[in-house]
Image (tube, rainbow, N blue to C red):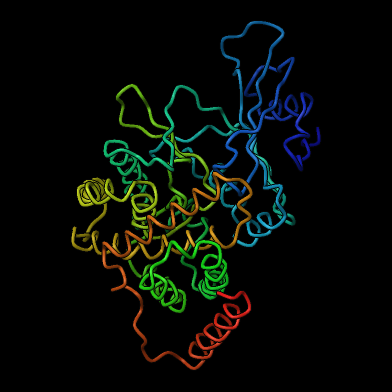
Length: 393
């Protein structure tokens, strides 16, 4: 038996011999005779290396791909540790292995994949996407693009709506696992301090207090979302991960499934509309976009799901979108100007959406928690205040 090719530690180590070996494993493509490797997506993502491999062939072959994409774990040790802690690389590997061919949305075809459970190093070799339009996330989507993206989400969510206990969905990462929520709460509060330190001017006094209140209630917030309708979600549904057809067809190709899992579908909707549109465009089209989303998921099989509940979940999930913005702003090394600008703009847009939609209504009210919960919350509050003082925030 031929040993499988090793997982490269860096995109610079990809060479012709390695490419030939991985393509031969499943017999997808003719063996190339030459290769040129370039890094792509610089500044659009910080959790992985994405390399485009341009391929040459000794003989003309119309079916041979001129290029392929190779995706690896981040070269940044801090980001890589976060990827392991949150199972980001495992999630994407499992998605392409088990689910990609079963969902009604377009995503690149998997040519080869490997995952190392102990280290969480991984590699995906994917078809290269060509002939589709990309939209600058900083500039934001226009109304037509935004609605097109939301319709694709609705098709994905509708096909999996409340079927999360059936295979293969039952084997997917549970984003609302109650064992994870205390960890998320601690991680959020630690990163909120760093976010306030480096992006503090994005907050008003009101949204600063709101962000702190959200952080002390994450366990209850995640429990509330888990109690509602659930589906398979992308988790990082933003313009840098979307490719639009420019021939008039209503289709979107979606990449980067590292944060995918089982959760409330309106998380994807809220995260996309709040962070990927300018605030005026979001205000203009969000109600209509959510109405169209609701119509599609209901026609796809969602039952006992009135629009009022859909709109309520959309508003509630703008708080969940804030969790992601804070963790990105405070928890990752944003080494280049575009990554930093992207994170800040997403944060500002999310905070504006939370205020516009009066999402503070959904911050869990203090109840009568158990003794353990009370001790945990008090410990979080004390640690957060101490860390703020230490960082001078």
